[in-house]
Length: 270
Image 1 (spheres, rainbow, N blue to C red):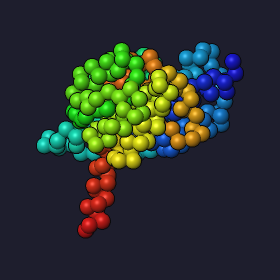
Image 2 (cartoon, rainbow, N blue to C red):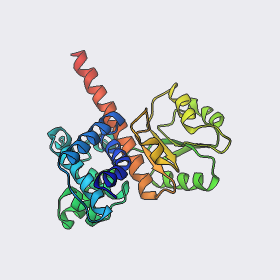
Image 3 (cartoon, rainbow, N blue to C red):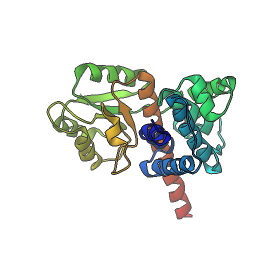
Image 4 (cartoon, helix red, strand yellow):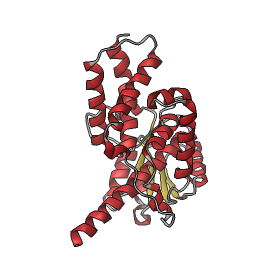
């Protein structure tokens, strides 16, 4: 396999990571494009496919961390509420958490991506765990037609401190929860009766705006960058740590966006 082919094989997953890190498809894909350009401008060879994956993510990390806006922490007050503390999740711990929980890197591999030693990396993971413990509890709607998967998701969501509003098996069932206004939606892309989880989500988002995490057995179909796509994606079969990471990130960016909006409104009112 050529170097270009090795790099291309990892791009869908780099897009997933970039979108989780930025909370936005467009912004994430822009960083991926910059990473691809950097890799193509400095050709290199890899003895093993795993080395290509590490190098692709390491190049992305160098570009991401080169911008101070991505790494500068905001001041944290001891009197802040949990939802205010959530948006303070610091840059390197968040990257460490995502590399392991979302992208499945081993600790050693993720440390190499971030270019830190293993002890420093473990400190970052511990920090991320403490900071993520302050995540917001919210009401969750699950759109999933497979009973066992729906049960697993319900148990996981509740173990994270959230409340499950209900489980919808079809688009029509999902739309009935519009008046409940969940704080987060977990939606399977393809439902057994032929209806679409994405269509159900779009119906619900006509009534309110909340973070959406999509679940699919074919994530590569939704990570091409060729059309509007979910920012938060879980691949089947999923790992509990992966679901936890994605839910936390979705809530992180929803809270962060709300805070920015509130700050803008306050400045406009002055």
